Length: 376
Image 1 (cartoon, rainbow, N blue to C red):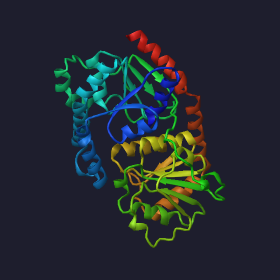
Image 2: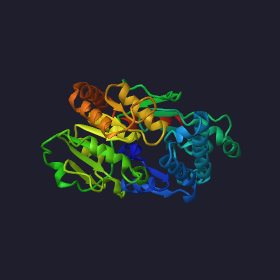
Image 3: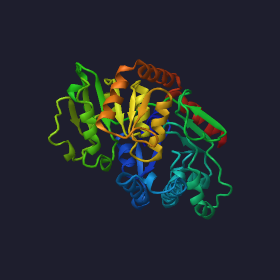
Image 4: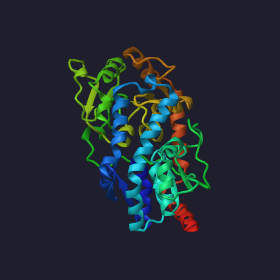
């Protein structure tokens, strides 16, 4: 939901109406962003919640062949879409929606747009990909029940990827593609006083995302803390509110532990970031021109995000297939390299400048609504 908020705000500012249909926690994000919402069926998210549990408790990519893993993930997103689509169709009709915006994994969005007969807008959340085809295949019986024949890709793609990044997936083949600047949105909060004061030494952020299950007992964070102890940095570790007994009795003189800090505000003060490979975190680091150490924690997608940063020269990867394992020593070498080698900072600045040259949501919304009018 977070990457979709800037376009929604731009639509409201331009005088249009926006309605978000989602389940928790996306529903809370949308409400906190000042958007009107309708709650999806709470049971719709159950397959996804199980996927998250399995991904955070075991290395899924090592447990099964890639074909089997893709089939399983496709079944999850296909099932979520199948469970949501009837309510989504009914809401779109009752509200009088003129278009439906959805991210690539949410195949229910494309199904509903086709069933209602309104334009489907595929909104990227980072490096682009087409609507999740295998999940659409899983949901084919639902499309047939809804009377959707010859299901095709979206009518418009909103593409957030700057030109020099090489996406790990093929782009969607759509009639219209609208490039748009990725604008980090983290919600509003009162910033801590220390964030507005000079750190006195290089500051490095650490986040493992918003799912507390990913943090476990803090074993990975322990390696990061130990590995960076002698680098002369301030390490800001966001914990997601997780309990981290693995950090007990560690020397934490260079560490600042925080439940949550808005990532865009934190990165504005940082010289580097260590993270889990989430798309939003990866792109927030690109936007802030901050070199990245990526330690993939949620399967092939997070590893692919790390490889995108590494291929561009803006970061490096540990713990993925073909890279070094995550140890304190390896983390120390990697973070030290990000801070010492100016090539990482240079590449990160180049990507950030590219992103700032892309059209802002405020200009894209005009082009998008014109297209919607032409298709109506």
